[in-house]
Image (tube, rainbow, N blue to C red; front, side, top):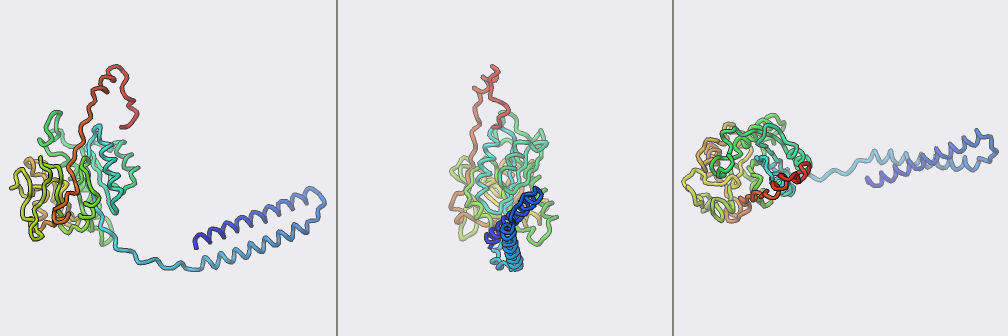
Length: 333
């Protein structure tokens, strides 16, 4: 019907143009004093006016006709709020680009990106703007005494603590002021920018009631770490380092219901937690082991990997820069 309406409107405009044009020609002839038998022209103008009037009437009737009712909408999927801390380095754009293009395949996803920076950077702002995703862009600078220094091992200090906590603060504030009864429906997931994610893991977590868990590959010096499930319940954890921790899991191995996050406004990550206890510092006040919800076929499938991009070697670049021949700094990498 919409196509027919467009065609009729087009016809009306064409006819209106023709009537106006013929009227203009007739007026010019009269002003020019040229003798002309204009009865034929007037006849054509009259016919066109009648056709125009007929089409206008049809359009009025069409406009009064109601469109058929839409099919009932399916219940909306719970939104997955993915929290990603990020910081400036040579591979940052590459990491965020890969991650964003994975997220494009996940419906109802809201990406919360938090920069470890005193301000939002143009690189991340532009990438998010062009990503095609629903997103929120935040920034929170890590205190200097909590930052890893050059040469420090990655495990020495927890990274992304302030940024994850800032995202939780924003999420609680944003959901509090949003109208509607569904403002607490959703799932929160902490996705670092250097990991690799199967789109299936997001569908697994979408039904989270409290805290869902699953295996993570290539982590902790092992092929994978995982909750061990017996009779549909998590009973222990398969891990090679300090299995006695309350929740010996990687950050990529769990999701939390938004409702649970909102109901526990004090729950956050403790930057002073001992090494390996960061995840436990957040989860301890939210859930018990007996309440964990095993996903990924009772934790038998690996759908997320703790990958890390190799730090690029810039020896040739540095040598060229010393000669004044370095890469154009205006080209964003």
